[in-house]
Amino acid sequence: GQSLEQPSEVTAVEGAIVQINCTYQTSGFYGLSWYQQHDGGAPTFLSYNALDGLEETGRFSSFLSRSDSYGYLLLQELQMKDSASYFCAVRRLDNFNKFYFGSGTKLNVKP
Amino acid sequence: DTEVTQTPKHLVMGMTNKKSLKCEQHMGHRAMYWYKQKAKKPPELMFVYSYEKLSINESVPSRFSPECPNSSLLNLHLHALQPEDSALYLCASSQGVSGNTIYFGEGSWLTVV
Figure (cartoon, each protein chain N blue to C red):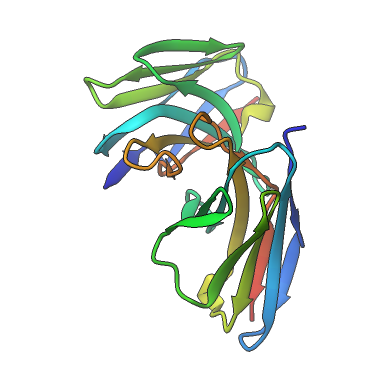
């Protein structure tokens, strides 16, 4: 089975840095992905970690540590438009077509 | 073109109705998905088609019936639904073996009355 846990809600101010954690218990996966979903919209891809370490994409960075069963999404220079829900997701090793999503974190960015 | 299109965007149906949700992608992806999402919850996997064949059914009730007419199209046929089936239904696609990303459509908001 799989379980990906995230904090339910995080609040930060514009211009700040925020880290959204994802701890997981899963039997094996190809990599850890992050998706953003605005209210009323569809999830959109942000970042992917196949290997341990940090991946940087503009203001967003993502980190994976398989030995610690842990990953995070780091958002820098927060903007109001970053207010959204963020999901970590894994692609299962036993079936590469299975993508499972974490519990989700609602990020509120305040002025 | 990284677009997955879904129709209709909104659907209201009675418990005795039969309706269908439709999805189309032209990215050449060989895996297509249906996910169900309730408010404030993550997307929940329902079905996966790989090379036009049903490869995963996550124990979804038979009142939901998927169909993949060709490599670009995916349908979800709905019959005798319950009010608790009201949710956002998301279609998605990925490249399959080599794809680490799935691309979602905007979803179909379903209300069962």
